[in-house]
Structure formats: C-alpha cells, structure tokens
Image 1 (tube, rainbow over the protein chains, first blue to last red):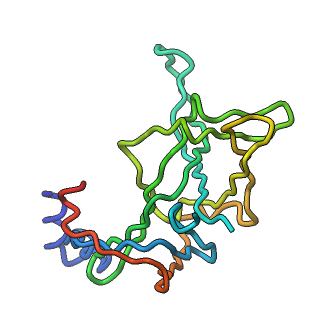
Image 2: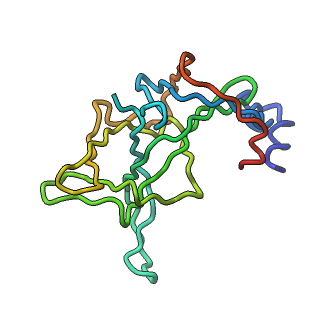
Image 3: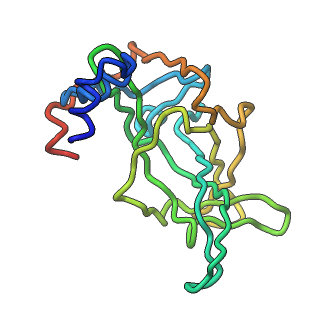
Length: 48
Length: 141
C-alpha cells in the first residue's frame, strides 16, 4: 500500500492514477447485462 | 439469444520441459461463461469486470479433425482467478454438439476481438435488467 500512498501525495500523478490509488469502494453494483464496445454481454442466469 | 459465452486470449510463457532455458511466449485461448458482472467504483469512474466459470484447457477443450473447437463445461477450473477486465472479453457462442455428448462447439461472433486496452472502453449498464448491490466486497475478496 506504500505504492498507493506515494501516488496519492504525488502532484505530478495523473488524475486517474490518483483516483486509482485512493482505492475502490467496497460496495459493488452487479448487473446481469452490460454492453462493452458495442457487444452485449449477459450473465449465464440472464441468458437462461 | 446467447450472450454469456466468452473467450479470452492470454499470453503465457511456454516451457517445453522443466529445464527449458528458452521459453516462448504463446497466446492461448481460454473459454468461459459469464457468471457475474461487477462494476468497481473508483468514485470518479467505474471499471466493469466479469466473473467467469472457465473451462480447463487441459481436459475440457479439444479441436477435432476439421479444426472445430469443442469445450466441455463439466471440466471447470481456475476457480482462484475468476475475474477478467471487461475489455479483454470476446464473445463466442456455444452450440451443443449432437455427436459428442456433453461437448459444445465454439462459434466466434462477428466481433472477433476488442482486445486493445489502449482504445477507450465504451460501456453501458443494462439498467432494465436485474441489479444488485454486493456490500463490503473485502469479505469476498
């Protein structure tokens, strides 16, 4: 986690890197369908 | 329609023997089925990841004499690493093979690959479908 601390403090780090270094939220939204670059993906249970 | 079939080409080092000094980098396709789609939130942006069941490449994948790839979904493995980034996924269709029981033929979709992570990823949640919050994923991970 030393890595993360370095990037959070570093003013030259890009905004995206800083947000990544701050870590993710531990509540995650799950969805049974997603479109990625024009292709539709479903979960198996959505397919059935 | 079937939208849960996925293939991923992964690069890995191939050793011919345990003492091989010159391993080559090979590209290996893996076949799986989407079990869950997670949207990781980094506050300002989100990153979608897919959770799969993967077919074991050693026992669950074969190529027949005419070059057709077949997979057996009873041979599932790699349970300790079920996630991939959404951009790595290419869609495939699995059709039950009538000649070999339990085997499915792999058919590739129109879009062979969107495997370039340099390209900006365009993604959209299908909001009309079932949604659910997983709370405190630290416990799961």
